[in-house]
Length: 215
Ligand code: SF4
Image (cartoon, rainbow, N blue to C red; front, side, top):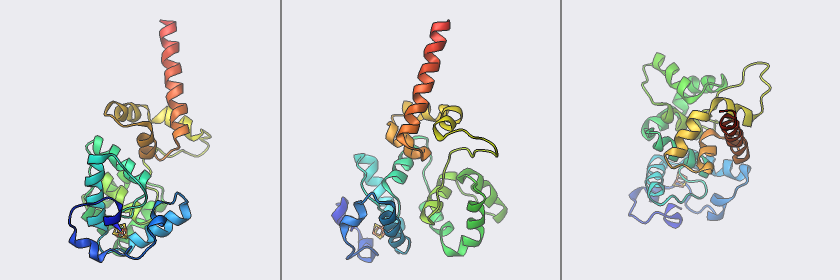
């Protein structure tokens, strides 16, 4: 599949791809159910690590991202572009181990506690695992979890998503935009809709404008 997609270099690993013979069109469907099915195929693929590594390498140069590749959706790979801008690159071999059934007994309960990738990384130190948050994020995605970096709402916190972005994410949003990330990438990084991000940005601009008027 990867040959057909966009990789032009010789890849010995592609002959072991689990997606050989799968209808290519399915990899580009936006439907979440279809994407989940394709991600299920990638989950059992023996060359997933090489596939994603080469895909990220290619997309880092081309800025083109389509479909599910290497077990990650376009949105998840957009999030990794932002992570890279922030200086965070996943260790895919480590991510693969952490997403394997061997680690499920540790990882699944941590995910079910709603911990962020950074918090899971801290918890894993108790298991003698030193791992970066972005590596955990990929491991969680590969295992079918959300891997959200958004702060959690506490009990009784009725804020909408855009309000949470407005209140909690200003620094990272402006930081990513200064580093060259577009709104679509930033929304993917936060795993919120572009509309929610746009509303938060509008609120910050309105606040700044009020500040100028008051001065
Ligand atoms: S990881 Fe997914 S897209 Fe990549 S070769 Fe394997 S099945 Fe195909």
